[in-house]
Amino acid sequence: MEPPMGKSGSLRNTLVRSLVFGVLIIVFRFAYVITITGESCNVGDFCFFSLPETFNFVVAGTGPGASAIAANDVVRATNGVDLYTSKDWIKAVNFYSSVFQELISEGHLSPDSKSLCVETPSGQDVYSLKQVGVKDSVGIFKKATRPLVIKALPNRVPFGDSTFDFVFSGGGRFDKVSRPLELTSEIERTLKPEGFAVFHIGAKDTYSFNSFLELFNSCKLIKSHDIDGFFSSMPRVREVVLKKEVEILLGRVGVAKPKSINKDSANKCWVPDHKQELVRNAERLITEEPLKPWITLKRNIKKIKYLPSMVDISFKNRYVYVDVGARSYGSSIGSWFKKQYPKQNKTFEVYAIEADKAFHEEYSLKKRIRLLPYAAWVRNETLKFEINRDPGKNGSDNGRGMGRIQPFGGGGGGNNGGDVNEIQGFDFANWLKNTVSERDYVVMKMDVEGTEFELIPRLFETGAICLVDEVFLECHYSRWQRCCPGQRSSKYEKTYEQCLELFTSLRQSGVLVHQWW
Image (cartoon, rainbow, N blue to C red):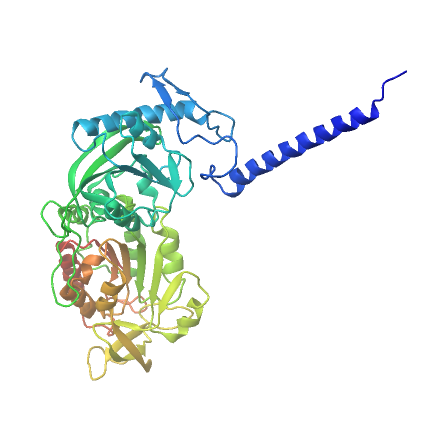
């Protein structure tokens, strides 16, 4: 007689289905943690393949054949490779370990230091700190890699004031922070007085290095030197050691002073040597009046040495372009700045200042451009706005003449048969001082039909000129007319020599200004 098999087979099938169901739950849970949350497991979560909070690694040797061995579970990368045994991980750990050992020998770091590594995706630097004996160490990044790195945004470091003795940023990652001032403020807040902050950055010139130092309010420079990097994209890095002082150091000796501006009084700003050197390296001014300025413009543009083509502008908090006398979008913003100005992949905030109402509607359709529908002037007041009919210059948009402002009762130039309207003028220098700061990168183009002879002195008088990194200035004078050989335009009273004096005074004051036509 055959034994009954139905009952045992049914039990076996039930067990198999239960096991498969359990495996599916585990797989779905793991997939959720990895793909949905975008990070490894949080404390208390149920998931697999997470690195235990208590773990030990052994890095054998420091040469090319060194290997990392996990005493406990190993986190695996998405391609299946053990992250903590990969060559890149070992190379990074060895590099950072040697860096930290040197900092310990110099007294900038100790085994008792409570340490923070910022913007560290996988935490090699955190692990290296633990390897050299600095056990109380943690990293932060936008995605967590526990237990080495916790989740945190650069502008919201999740620790209290004066928490850390040591803060580190490696791999040139600080160079890529979108708003570096927010991160440096958080670093200074969480760093203890007399604590040290060490950065590995890619600053290759004095402009970028000083821009980096200007981001800090309460840290002074201790040391800066170049060292060999550990990856091909950054073979040399600049290591900068800063120390937090008890007092705020703005303007004190030994600290990179920003272009300080007193908003309530007239003053001249301090122009550092590295900016004056840039001015000396700029293209030469055209000393002889061009007979055909409209042709000279095309030739001169090819000779202009743009500031971003000479230096690294990475360590600025914001990037701002101000077009004073913008006219239509295609006049200069769309045709020149957007296409030709070397922006080093930075996103610029664009301000268009244009009093002519004929162009205002166009800007309402342009995203990320802020229109100021007023006339840039030396104070807030109502002005006369004249649309000129000058046959000597075909620089109009859709046949519309160039606009020029005059205060009521003011002289200067005659009416050229144009329309005259009332518009609102505003104190441009005061607006600039309240809109940008010394830590921003500011480019300004100015084409204001002769008003530059009032605006530029006002910018100097208030010190606002020192907030501008690069200026493209069209100076208006009684020039030769294209239509009528041998005749000068009667629209402007100034001479070319007076324009040249204006450019010369700007450069002598350390302002990188270019002749525009």
